[in-house]
Image (cartoon, helix red, strand yellow):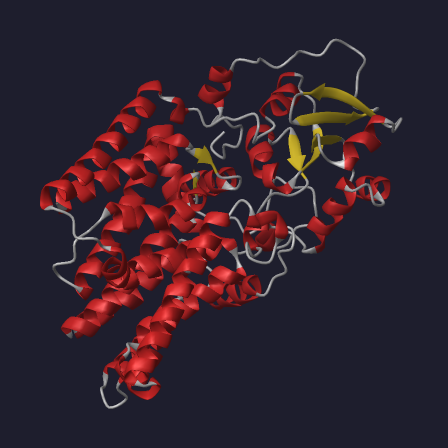
Length: 509
C-alpha cells in the first residue's frame, strides 16, 4: 500500500504544481543575479537597474539564483516545473521517513497528508521561490535530528554544519534550522539532563552557527540576517498574520481551521492525560523536544503566513501517528484498498487532463505582470525612469533595462533605503505625490487600476495616458508623450510566453 500512497502523492503534487506554475515576482531579479554571476564571475553588491535610493547590499539568496538561472537557461518553463515538483516530492518523502522513525510499521494514508497540504497549497504550489530550499532543509534537519536521537547515530551530527553552509547560501530561512538544533538541545536537556545527547546537540548548534560565516559576505551576512528579522514589513502581506489581519483571514481560513482543530485535539489530550496520570507524571513521560517544536512552529505560524508551511510539516512529521490513532477507522481490507485505488485513479485522470492541455507552460500572465505596458515601452523605444509597484519592479527591469530604470523591486530590505517603499505608498495614495515624483525624476508610471493615483494622473495636466488594459495603465509625462501614432503591443499570448525570458541584460556584449 505504501507504493499506492507514494504514487498518489507524486501525482497530486505534479497536478497542483501544473495548475499554477507561475513565476514569483522576484524571480526575475534572481535570473539577473544568476546571469550576471555566470557572465562576470562576481556577485554585484550594488543595484544597477534602479533609480530609487539604493545602498550596498547582501544577497542572501544568491545560491538559489544560480540554480534558477541554470534551470531556466537550459530547460525553460518545463525545467522549472519539474524541479519544483521533485523538490516538493522529496520534501514530503522525507516527512514519511520521519513518520517511519516514530513507528516503523506506520500505515501511510494520503488523506492525512491531503488535509494538511490543502491548507498551504497556495504557499507551496503557486510558484517557484527560494524558500523551496528551506522547505526541504527544514524536514531534512528534523529527520537527521530525530534519527540521531532514536538510533544514536552520532556521526550524522557532522552533516548539520555542512548542510547549514548550503542552506545559508540559498535562503535566509536557515535561521529556522539553527533554531531546530537549539530546540533539540534544550528539549533533550529537559528529557534527560544526565544524558550527553543534549550536549552533543549544543556543540552541533555552535559549530553550525560558525559555518554560517562561510559565505561571500563574511560577518556582514550575519548582521544582515539579524536586521532582516527585525525589519518592519508592513507593506509585505506574507509577513502579516493570517490570524490577526482581517484581509488574510478569508484567504487562509483552511489553515486557521486546521490550526484550531489541531490545538483543540492537543488541548483535549493534555487535559485527559493529566487527569488520568497526574500532571507531573504526564509531564515526565512526554517528549519535551516534540512539544517544543510544535510550540515553536505554532508561534512562527501565528506571526507570519509564510511560516504556515513549517507548522504543517512539523505536525505531519511528528504527530501523524497521534492523529492516525484518533481518526483511523478499521475498514475491511478490500474496502481500504479500494478507497486508496479510487483516489489514485481520480488524481491520475485529473493529472492527465491538466498535462494534456499544456496550460501550465504559460507563465506570462497579464493579470500578474504589466506585460503589455512593458511591450508598449519597448516597441516604441520610450526611455526613462519607470515607477511601478515594487512587486513588478524586477520584471520591468528584466524586460526594459537599459532603456528604462525602475524605482525599486521586491528586494527592498536588501537593496533600497527602508523609507523608499513608504514614499511609494504615499505616491499611490496621492499623498504629496507630485513632489516625490519630481524628486526622483520619474518619467513613466505603470499603475494598477485600483489605486487612487490613477484618477489623480487622469486629471493631472502634466501626465498623459498612453496605454491601458484591464489591470494596468501606463502614463507618460507630457515631455515624453508624443502625439503621434504609437505602435500597439501584440495581444498574442503565445508571443509573450515565447519571449518572456528575453532581456537586454548581457554583460558579454
